[in-house]
Image (cartoon, rainbow over all chains, first blue to last red):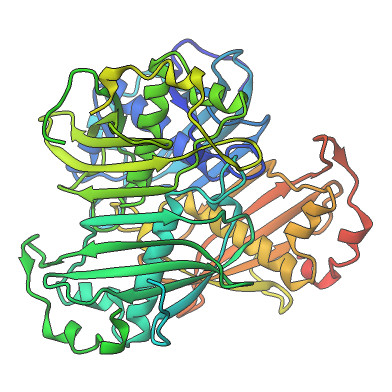
Amino acid sequence: MKEQPKSRHRTLYRVIYGDTDTMGFAYYANYLRWFEIGRTEMFRSLGLSYHSIEERGIFLPVAEARCKYRSPVRYDDLLVIETALQKGVKAGLTFVYRILQEKDASCAAEGCTRHPFMDKAGKVVRPPDFVRKVLKDSLFV
Amino acid sequence: MKEQPKSRHRTLYRVIYGDTDTMGFAYYANYLRWFEIGRTEMFRSLGLSYHSIEERGIFLPVAEARCKYRSPVRYDDLLVIETALQKGVKAGLTFVYRILQEKDASCAAEGCTRHPFMDKAGKVVRPPDFVRKVLKDSLFV
Amino acid sequence: MKEQPKSRHRTLYRVIYGDTDTMGFAYYANYLRWFEIGRTEMFRSLGLSYHSIEERGIFLPVAEARCKYRSPVRYDDLLVIETALQKGVKAGLTFVYRILQEKDASCAAEGCTRHPFMDKAGKVVRPPDFVRKVLKDSLFV
Amino acid sequence: MKEQPKSRHRTLYRVIYGDTDTMGFAYYANYLRWFEIGRTEMFRSLGLSYHSIEERGIFLPVAEARCKYRSPVRYDDLLVIETALQKGVKAGLTFVYRILQEKDASCAAEGCTRHPFMDKAGKVVRPPDFVRKVLKDSLFV
């Protein structure tokens, strides 16, 4: 995850009181909310909102999530959520994320989420063409 | 809300890190989660879970919520969530809550939530008989 | 709250999965998170971040919160959080909020939060001059 | 993680509306809240609350979290949070968790969190004796 391709999607997030805990840092579960923001805004930037994917009967539930917490995130920090896709994944999609401090680009956390493609009945399906078409090679790292 | 009838429903809640914020107190939005626990467990104690009310096609969405924050709640505090119903409400139900410290019964917060009865189509309906039947007079304050 | 002065502060918020609940709507507690975003960004737009107020030893804890839920908010809705200050409040500050759908400016919710000014010791204090100075008359409704 | 030793700590959790999302399932970030409940109650059951560990100047921040989501969790489900410690970890503690449906003991999710021991200055320290003393062998899997 060292190299940082220009195509990696980026979106900003401002940490609120509701994200923090009594230790003075952002609560560890909330990073997974930021990962969600990252993958949702990546899809939107490709012209295919995740909402519209669902409207076509395709779902991407989370099968696995991981996060490594590198350095503290505090109240009012402005974060960059970087999102990309992992190369070589055969079924579903694996998103990889980095949470950076906007002020100095230091890495606060990194993680990933793995998602199968599912239809309305909850059955795992192959990646639909209308999704694959928008996933540019440059998004894969 | 001074008098405290014996019939007021009580349930316990332990404050976790995820409930607190960087000021060292419980984050103000999370009290509304506790109110939800209070009214849900009150229904369950009456032998009619809120889940089973929904399964019969009746919903109680929140139309209004209020909370007064009296004294700080901190990490690991053991709270008593007290729930009752407000007398004289003609449409829907208004729940009233008190959040007490278990150790000394001091009042940390009090509030209320107002709920219409709705059917599946989102239309406001009269209180169904199967709900009214379980609401004992002693629950109303 | 009918009239809508041009000076009311506005900030955008996109509803994520983590904000919604199984009824298909945004969970009622999360509106209080959006209120926090509203008042924080209003302060920032005045050139005085809430964070910097705290760094000067002044805190604005929430003493009371209210919200009326007008119409459903759903996943991926783009919201406008409108924030202003209530006129005639003598101690502390009372913020008033409206949550609007960005697409048609319909009102999804409105509410308020009341905050005393407190020092580090938790003692209620008078509004500090450095805060009062930035609060323009036009922000009060 | 197939074998299930009797010493694994167990605590119950009831899923509320605030835990669920519009897909009808529990939101994936909230499992990390349940993991926190699991490790906190495990400590309490050993007669050493996590709160009291902090009061002695020792902190266990989260360095890494993982969760595999096995089967859906829904509103009002009663869950068993199973917590144990991973054997052979040299620095800090690694907790392993299973989220089970109470009704049929089916596994809804499993995961782990890794924690260094830190002092007040944020420096990583060796496991303090007063903590090691209470960690029975039977808790390690």
